[in-house]
Length: 195
Image (cartoon, rainbow, N blue to C red; front, side, top):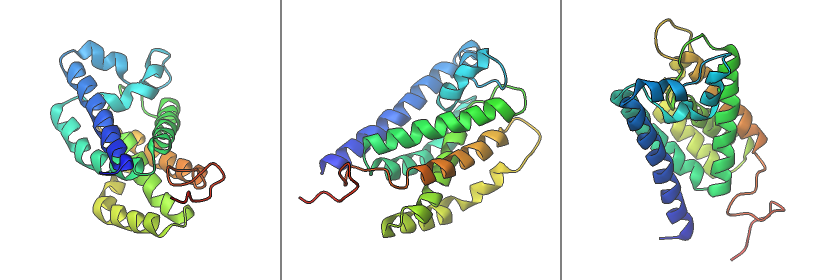
């Protein structure tokens, strides 16, 4: 097992472990859930820009997000921990701020915004990265999860379509910005490292 693969597995389990731990804690206390929720245009809800992906309102909500998050986390983390961390934090911050600024009033929770961000990131990365592997991954991700795109359409009810939409847009913007980001397989000049 290579060092990169071990780091990828550790990153994936750490990310999902954190989401599960915080979500399970929030499920036992509505106060915790509301303290970590993103509440648009509220100073109290601004913390949710960072914490919204960590909390879910129900166990089925958490479980639905887990499988695709696992797949996409592994794919992104294969480029290195720094790459994964930069992509994830950028998507969370940009998507979360857009939700905070423009979404309906209410408590927005769940990792769906991050999931849509990863989806948009992997699709757009295939356009700008110009690696065969990125194009293949974009095609496979589009085929496997393309149906989620309907989740960005406005609707009434408890589903935060705004988190889906702004997560997707954030992922696309971040992919474009990171197109020349050095990964674990390149040095700082962007040239491949020879072993």
